[in-house]
Image 1 (cartoon, one colour):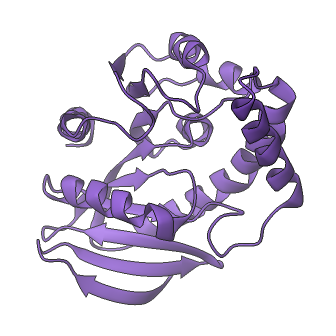
Image 2: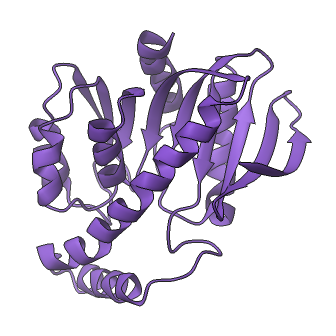
Length: 241
């Protein structure tokens, strides 16, 4: 891990950009150390997502958590995949036409992303936990929800996950969801124009953990109420502290 920039935000949070094996990322740490770590999932495009990511990180830091994120494969300045771009175009075309999104489109778009992204998240976790300012335990918060499912199954260092049900999930991931045993909180926007509500509810039902909570709010994809940030901190306080 190589840090490439550093700045102290006005609330005292230290923000550092880094690269790891060519993958860019950002780490935010509070004043107190060592701190539990929350991995911030997102749909890709660190620069575009930065305002929301830094707000989430600062909110977490106020409660004593470090937060970190990395760029997804095929997003930001990373090389594009022609197959993924075609699948994304097919998905958008179906949504614009008001048609059901075929499973094969979701598979073409999401499964390769999960296969590529999860090893990168695990490598980032290796490097982050080696830092003296990070003490664990670790939580995962955000999307792409399929990535969160895979991480919850294969990464034993993640103790709890707050998953954003705002993206399509391949049917094959439902079997993995049944293997999830860590505590979950799932956030669902009821009127999310780019998501399949019934699929999200079916996925929540499929999760195998004995402790799972669904927070469903009215509104579209970007209309998550601010109080859900406080609810997320309370969730992680139960499992990371």
